Amino acid sequence: MDDTSLLQQLVSAFKCLPGVGAKTAQRMAFHLLENDRQAGKQLAYSLSEAIDKVGHCTQCRTFTENDICRICADPSRLETLLCIVESPTDVLAIEQAADYKGLYFVLLGKLSPLDGVGPEDLGLEQLEAMFRKRKLEEIILATNPSVEGEVTAHYISQLATRHAIKTTRIAYGVPIGGELDYVDSGTLSHAFEGRRHY
Image 1: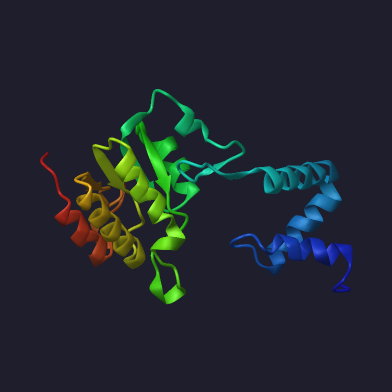
Image 2: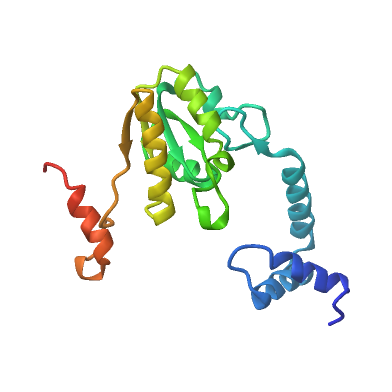
């Protein structure tokens, strides 16, 4: 196939998606062209509109097409409770799975000095301004349990301590339905440390 052909450009465009290699991208492109050109047009339109119009909430930094997202604009949310997450997908996961009624702050990453990601890249100045302005009673650290996620959580907990804000960390450990002999030692260790009264 000619590298500059429209077909090859379409295949290459699909390869930008996570987990999509050359074969999968080719299957996607061929499917749209062979079976559902109208869906392809709708996909192109929706993608173009989203790229042009979806930005970040000025308060929590999640995705929205307005200045303030629907969660931050909801007067029934608890303004004294703030959950801090790494990405907008984490907000969606918590909203779908938990009965959480507070607000969020999205870091859009995690501290990683090796990758050149420092506090200024995560909006931590904006977060600390929230600590000063709002009457927060508790922050919930919901960063991923990776080395970088733990470092980020520790850094933020130190900021919160300076402002006398209670800091908690989401629990993690053995998943529901998991079997102990399949759980890695680090996860099992954290599960024991985070045990609670039954």
